Length: 123
Image (cartoon, rainbow, N blue to C red; front, side, top):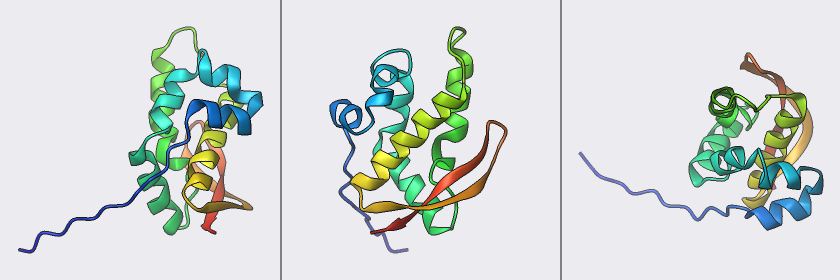
């Protein structure tokens, strides 16, 4: 058996960068939704989102279940439409930082809390 190593440099937007690009979500990212920011902004998330994108699926699928479950654990936190937009904005920021752009097309997501998500392509 051969052993191979795969490595790739992944850019992770910081809170300040995200807040300047998406000021409408800055309060959520620094406040009650900070736990979601910490879940999404990881190299592992990008790798999963990249693979899903290559298979023609919306990138947000990579964190939909995890974010939904973590939000449910917090009694005072509501998983609203705005929260889903916030998660989508974080995915958009992560994808853009790593050379992907929105296509303007939405695709179905197989998840109880989502119906559709943005599809990305390599720049």
